[in-house]
Image 1 (cartoon, rainbow, N blue to C red):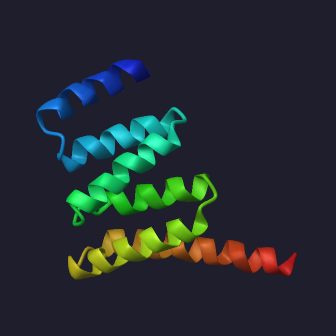
Image 2: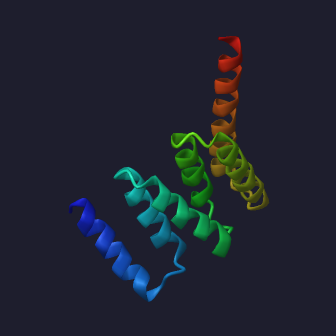
Length: 114
């Protein structure tokens, strides 16, 4: 299935349930893969607003923010996700978000050393 077909299929499914967090996440993933980072960010920010407990949102959104050099937003969204993961006792996601934050911290440390 090519890019446009997947996106069109997801958009069609979203037309019947625009607040489905998984479908919005899937659409954001597709948009991000094919270079439309702004659309992906918009979709994921919407998910974080209408379903803040959907944990996948925070890691992917943080990654995309990093890719577009918005590190402060990435840090903020990782921290927000970390809080929710902690509340849900989701250690796997909590670990992933902590690791993402540590990697950003290491980047800052290396930049100061140069």
